[in-house]
Amino acid sequence: MSGEGGAGRVMTVHQPGAAPKVSQRGEDYFPIHPRTILPGTAGQFDLYLKRVDWFVLYAKKGETFSVEPKLKELLDVSEFYIRVDQRFDYETYLAKNLGNMLLNNQIPMEERSKLFYQISSGMLKQSFASKLPRGLDEKTYQAMQTLVKRGIALLSKEESLRSLSEFLSHKYHTYSHSLNVMVLTISVLQSVQGIDQTTLFEAGLGAALHDIGKTQIPDAVINKGGPLNQAEWEMMKTHPVRALGICASMPISHVATNAILFHHERFDGGGYPGGISGEGIPVYARVLALCDVYDALTSERPYAKALPPYKALTIMQEDMKGAFDPVLYKRLVYVLGNARIV
View 1 (cartoon, helix red, strand yellow):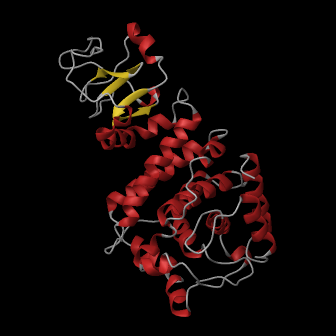
View 2: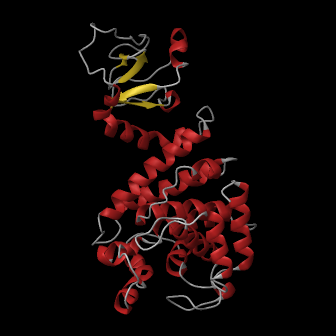
View 3: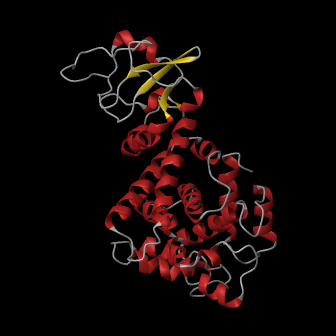
């Protein structure tokens, strides 16, 4: 880092006694990958190095990160450390610079995947927790668009889905489910011939927003530990239409709109809200429907335990006959198999 008036100033490693006294307990710090600190940026957190069983202040918050040749040996360390009480400041820094990090091939794919999931799930959790009584606001909508663009960029990399799958949450929450489904939908659509980048982006956005209508349904219904009664089921079935209402103030394309509205349609016509069938359901909505059910079955829900991937796929094929496009079902299996998830 370089500080005030110090464009060429070398970062100082503050030795114990020279720096303000800080706790040396390991639980007061958490490790980060050195490559997540980008030259030319600044963060509101202090960086530390670990030396045996004590921590050394490496650079102070607010300074601009730079790489000096004489410090190369320091940057070869496997981890930097940040105080736990500055975690939010580090996560804010990550959110701001995540796009560049995802494209940085010097950061291991596992670390990039972890960062993407950590930041994206946090953003969706905040958005979905708001209940959105007045609809989707411009700031949240733009954040959703950025999330999808980052997801497409990451998932275009070889081995990315395999790496990312290690971090996908399998404890069901509306926000984590939406992120998982977005990741799977993009991955499958990237393997389907004829899907252009605009459609891929808009379908990914629809996948991220597909369950946002559930923010207007009582938690007692969403998280019910047993079967829904008829009234509760009819309420639950309104969530695709409610989602469109939430998104009505934003310029969402017909692709994203159809993805949201039709993700519970069945290939045999037995779904909702329109009861449309076959190729009358847009291909991206058919893919979303597959990924939606697959992720639900492999997640721990209030009324059901998470199933292994192979078991979930078997149920989708044998117990839910007619629900899915058989060609796209095979495409999902192919993508999961290539990622070594099944």
